[in-house]
Image 1 (cartoon, helix red, strand yellow):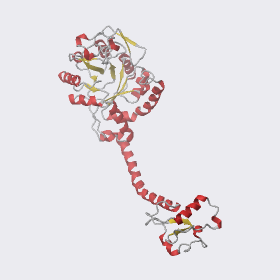
Image 2: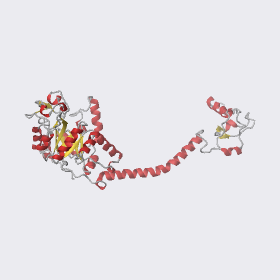
Image 3: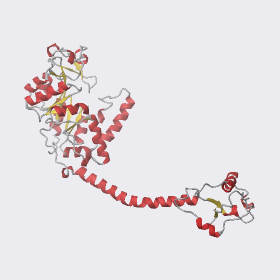
Image 4: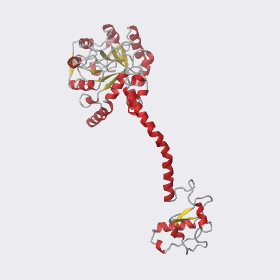
Length: 417
């Protein structure tokens, strides 16, 4: 080998070869390594050691001198040399690069083909999936019946929302001690009435009146008033508005509540126009079991799952059973919605979630598959504009009058079914 000699003669081991004069200036560590290499007894089957040719030059103290030309037949053997020389390392790298070449040769075209197919079907999902047929198109959704204009969840608020031609009423339900499904956002009545008791601890007839004014949650500093302060049952709502679509959110894993709602929906023949809603997948699973004919909305975990599939390029190939996505609009964070107590965290969340969620291609894909996207809870015209410009089906608002005025003035075309 050029620049070095392979020491393989067993009789050379045990002798220290003095360095030639021209190599005496090399660092001590290298000289020590050379000496150790020649004085150590190699284990059976151990690889031979490399030394510069000058280390085994003529004049060495070794009785055998240097390795003969014939012994050089045992030079580098892949698989036996374990990176013990720069040459061995470079050859090993070359071997690995050669081995990698077929992998890259097949992997890169496959990856390119996958990306192309993913984009193609993201834009044309109906080639793979039959879209859900919507029973209604919720463009104007009244949050708690329109809690910015009248007291939330009262019959008066619901009538006002219907006056503004609301397409969907958004409700939350709890169960009283005597088994009545009552429309109430909170489990505890303190904020709404001043009475620090849970709904479940009282009979329906014992429920207190609402306060004379209630702050609008998504419009801090604004208060709603109304002459009607009575809490209502879900049955009363179904009787009063038999053909009006409603979204019923379940906040707790209460099987009795879930099955009572499912039975009410069946009794009033509202399977297609009453939506199961919950933030938790464990609750939604029970809702689906209680009445599988009712349309489902995305839970929080399912929503994140869809985002992950979208960014991985897998969404076009995955079945979606949900028909509605109720999603908050990130632009309201730190303005009308404050999920964190720290202002800095709210600002960070607004920036990050805006980049992640507000994707026209994602919303368009879901709409093409019959999933209706509705943003909550928007109370300003600028937010209405942002939501509909992204392609949303509709908006959930505390101010149905303001949203009706916007829709009448701008008239966005409802997504094609």
